[in-house]
Amino acid sequence: MGGRRETMVNALLLAGLLAVPLWALWADEPFTITLATRVAILALAGVGLNLALGTGGLVSFGHAVFFGIGGYAMGILAFHAQNYTPLIEALSIPGTKSMPVIWAVAVLASALVALVIGALSLRTSGVYFIMITLAFGQMFYYFTISWPAYGGEDGMSIYLRNSFPGVNTLVPFNFFAISYALLLAVLLLVGRLMRAPFGLALSAARQNEARLRAVGIDPYRLRLSAFTLSGAITGLAGALYADLNRFVSPSMFSWQTSGEIMVFVILGGVGRLFGPVAGAALFILLEHFLGGISEYWHIFLGALLLGVVLFARGGLIGMLAGEEVAHD
Amino acid sequence: MSLLEIADISAFYGPSQALFGVSLSLEEGEVLALMGRNGMGKTTTLRVISRLLAHRGGTALFGGHDLARLPAYRAARLGIGLVPEGRRCFGPLSVRENLIAAARPGPWDLGRVVALFPRLGERMGQQAATLSGGEQQMLAIGRALMTNPRLLILDEATEGLAPVVRREIWEAVHRLKAETGLAIIVVDKSLGELASVADKAVIVEKGRTVWSGAFGGLSREVTAQYLGV
Image 1 (cartoon, chains in turn orange, green):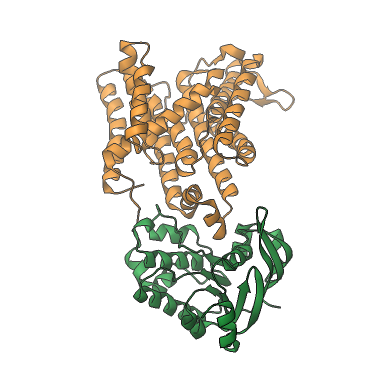
Image 2 (tube, each protein chain N blue to C red; image 1 turned 90 degrees about the horizontal axis):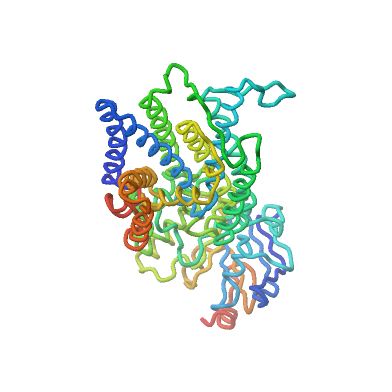
């Protein structure tokens, strides 16, 4: 969204996110490629939350549920594939190590859960909505802790990277390219959606519900659709994140994870399409550089977050591209 | 059957009763002037018709559908297009976005709205909040038309506008009456303008219909008694 300057900032962000791993490939720095991959994946999770939080004004403190479901979809399918055990014994349905299949399952499962959570929580608003989404997150967190079949509290390790047709996914740059391509595709989809009547009405619902009803749009259904799509996108990010780490654990469901995704969105710019990309990049940079100096680097992150909330409501994108403008 | 049939409705704001028995009816293509002094229940009646406020007693039918059972968004989809008092556009969205966010299939589209209000065509990319009052009013009417209504409700559409802009709005209302089969309910203080466009009139006093009939049938005594003019 926004004017020409914001388009420039967005293009530079995308170019930078591609340039860093390309440089790392040339300089033989695989760890840097992994950092860039984390940025792309966490940005994707943030793009999902931003659709609900930024455009729809839904302060969800439970998006870790979808991130975790995506992660566990990958973990469970790959676990059965690597152990040659059927996923569902009675039906002899096997696991899989195919990324596209895993992504489809992750997206469908997280969308379905988002639909159910949204259907219940969207009947409330404000602090009650925040508390209900947080409660769902904690329910899933404690459920996975007490689920010994898939590692319980310790989580699950997957020994091999999942496969993508025609690509060696064990090569770090290739996995980055897959994550980057998915991020681009989702940014394109959400960008179009935000300019379509659906996105405009969602934004209008945040401004005035009664006015929206008066023009024939049901804010509840609209928000439920947005929340479901938002959950599906964050679920896809969770599947990729689990694949990157080849590990899933209940911490993917924790409220801290929900908080971190929200931090990417706020740091980058709430409601700005590329806000989560800028926010995730800044978060990973801070974690990498400040984390090397002190294990208490979150203090600096907290101070930065305070500064953004108090003095730069548009986040990083707002500082670089200026106030959001209406679009033609 | 009338397009809109409101019979003896009562409505409340919390414990306070605002309507005690309002009745009116409207045919397709008719223009009805809803009149009365300030605070007598005109806007409340319009809020009941557009389902932003539920009525408790009486009946409200639109196109044969019982409005009592419908949420506001369903009533709007049936064809009730409200232009609320005070304009109230979606301020952060552009003119184009305000119009397309509300669009539903039908004869009214961006081109037709711009033909009715050429000024909007010049401001398509501009944020609605930065428009002048008159332009915001045109946008509010355009947004209601984009929902392709059968009934357009204009609540104080020219209130607080410059005379030249009021003229533009009234010309648009005349064009809507002449060129479309749209039924229109107008609330406005300008008796002269209402007389030029309205087919019938309903006067509400303290939440009750106290007079209804053909606009031409309004006598000086009636306007003096209920409108103070």
